[in-house]
Amino acid sequence: MELQDIAGRYLETGADLPAAKRTLKLVESALSQAARRQGKHGAAALLRVPRKRFQEEARPESVNAPPNLDEYRDEADPGNFYSEAELLDMYRAEYGALAEIEEPAATPAQLRRQERNLRLLKRKIQLINDLAAQISKPPVLDDLISGWFDQRVANKFAAASLETLADLILFMNHKGYRWYRAIPRLGEVTARRILSFLAGSDLSGSLSAYAMMPREKFKRVQAGGAVSTQSRQTPRDAIVPLEQINAATSFLNGTEGTNRALGTRNRLQADDDLAAINAWLGLYKDRENTERAYRKEAERLLLWSIYSKRKAFSSLSTEDVGEYAAFLKDPQPREVWVADKRYERFHPAWKPFVKSGLSRRSAAYAIQVLSTLCGWLIGQRYLDSNPFDGLPRMNAGNWQPISRSLSVNQWERIRSYLKGLPDDESGLRQRFLVSLAFGTGMRIHEMAKAVVADLRTYQFGSEPVWYLHILGKGGKEREVPLPTSVLLLLTAYFRARGHDFTTIQDLPGDIPLLSHLGQTQAALTTRSLDKIMKGVYGAVADQMQDEEPYAAEALRRASMHWMRHTHATHALQNNVQLKTVRDNLGHASLNTTSIYIHTEMADRHREMEAFVGSI
Image (cartoon, rainbow, N blue to C red):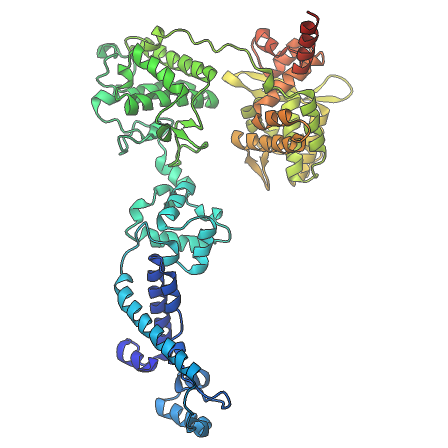
């Protein structure tokens, strides 16, 4: 049957040839995708072969054969304006003579071609019959992506090593709502249609909320304070942040903890472990960094207690916390407790530890924090005793390894690298950040919070001098001198950000000293600052790799905090008074600052070589 006849019989629009052609393409595409879902790429290619290929007949090459009626209709009447009889009269008027030509017998080659076409046509019909039932089947995780989406889109996923729908959904859950940004040349419109298709299919249950809603909306859904007492439905073996913990049973939530003080003596309104920990953390709500550090340690212990030990926090014994101290250094099973990198707390891939367990120093700090927590809860008459009191003292000490301070050579190489950066916003931001860190010894969170209003001027002579006001660790205030070279870089950096001013103090006070590129009002986070600094370290390490591989490797391990150590070490080596360095760093005692008084490793090594060699 001709396509128009088929349309007249089966389509709701009747003998509508354009509609019939569109419908035919949709059916062919659906069948081809069904074949690709099963990995039958050869069959998919065969289904895409136009039907005209199977209807070709041998014609003598010396005669210009007329088009058939379908071909003539496509050319002469694409709008379907003429009736069938009118179109036939037009065709005969134009091709009547040629249409009457009697074609000669086919050659052997032409006969073989006709036989091949007949075989392919039979194969195609069989494929259509076999695959017809597959078109209506819902997608499953093992289906190939190419079986459900346009081949051009599937190729983009293949380039990102995503083969099946399971691969794609796992990728979306991991990357979040804007997952498509990690797929080169995949637009947002296409991504939203793919998400809509998956969300409306039987696979919707495999999609996480993190993949289906914007980050800010997801965070609001997850929100509930530093630690929320709201119970969430989470699996028993799910390691989640405190705000998502579900410990509904009394033997886990602490209402019946064996180390609880008498209920009538409890000074807290909290009657369960989560609420009690929340009350303790609430003491530090105005000290963001302290609160975050303490929450991390309390969180790890509570999660371990519930999910590994299957005991309430308020039921832990000295033996239990001793076991926990060992766990901190090697959290097992690793796939449950350790993430491959740092994730936001709302991210599905979040874990309490990142890359590994804690060092001896970090473990000692954790035990100290947790002992303080338990001591406070005893004072509030929530706990009866402190299980950490029975552990041997884990002295972390105050010694700082010299390797956390840059050598003179490393620092000079960094300065040389910075001088070679362009004078655009990005280059000036890097130069100012490094100069501010080295020139003041500020902590990273202090730099992240610094704004124009923190700048101060004093008239000690003919020229004003500049200081930077800092609200430091423990809420302590201090002011550090802002050297002229740092101030000049800040001025150039502000102008590169688009600010027009006579003096910096003309600018609005809430403008951050360090901001996102192109967003001068958006302050950088501590993580962003550390990332920029590590980018500088990495670039300099690459330059040093061939000549000084050990110094290059040390730079690759460095963090922003190394600049604070470098500031103190180099200042003292250049005869800056100990008291001045103490005040810059915000230390309460000279004893703390004195840890930076040491010589370069090379100097020490030469001295010992000379000593040992003389024996």
